[in-house]
Image (tube, protein in one colour):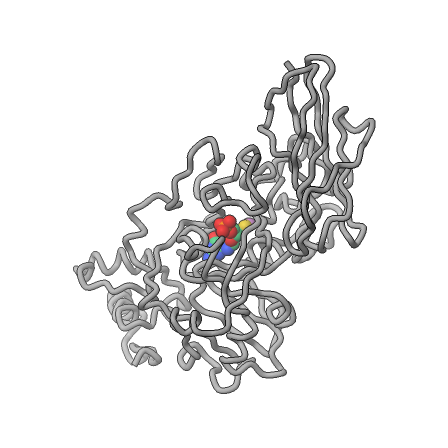
Length: 432
Ligand SMILES: Nc1nc2c(c(=O)[nH]1)N[C@H]1C(S)=C(S)[C@@H](COP(=O)(O)O)O[C@H]1N2
Ligand SMILES: [Mo]
């Protein structure tokens, strides 16, 4: 029975016994417990190899070891669509020129802490457990949902952006002279898609959600994240039950297609308006607790630390207001001609009310013309015409204001993680 934690009577202080027992546990499917005692799948794979067990390795909750033989990201990353930083691929904004409201999958940004994992939907199970449920306090007696179970529940579609909390991070260095470590995104760590799936609330209720439930902790099936030599464990980040019930989706489709591996197949969370790390991919389990939950992904990472923040940091939830031009960085345009510039603005607070554009580095501003409708959890497309009279270097700026009057300042206070750069970004172009 997978629920039992074997080896309690073995002498676990002896390393060889410990390794053997834990490998047996893992092969028996008690990997979660194995993780709990600090053994990563990678470690176990190595161990199993040493013990000559490799041929017998089953997939753990559907994750196949074969994923280890590919690059970190599965889909093609052509240089005209992406800037690649290791396991992260940033969309080039010029790739949105001429596109519709949604970002097609072939150019949607990817942010993997380690790598994309390949999950076999047939053997995968979503395990829901915790003190906030009726009768499933631990993972051993979790309520399990198969892929088909989820497909059979009432489906819903939402259009929403997913944006990395670090989107815009490079501007802390280039505009504020205070570079922050981490992936140096410009503005392409964001994308809007049409997500289809089952409301997380529906799944939680089927699992026996009680009125006492406070927080949930969804966890990915990708490898443990090791940061500065410290193993932070699986990618997981708590979310209040309130947000989970409000508008969070457990998505299995993206833009009408089966969710691709890089974006979380078989299912991912989509937590509208919140920082991208909330939208956990390759979800394998969800803890539901009657007490607040934490993980290093909200206590150490994805938290604001810096001179203007309290010593224990400020947790981050919603994304800030941002704007981007659908133009190449350092691109060229012909002088003496009228150009119709296109761009998009978005905010974690709700719809965008107004977008202003400056083509003279911020001296004068004009209102952009909205294109199409505003979608609550998506972005606002806009256009503005511009005629650069003389050849030379220009700085384009776009500044949006949302329905809460949230807007884009000229600068934002530094934080050590380089998160939530919501100031106006200087977009350099050259008129020839
Ligand atoms: N399991 C898991 N979920 C994850 C991540 C991850 O590395 N592992 N990255 C998060 C981060 S930081 C972001 S910004 C989004 C990116 O989603 P995308 O790759 O589909 O664009 O996924 C989030 N969900
Ligand atoms: Mo992110």
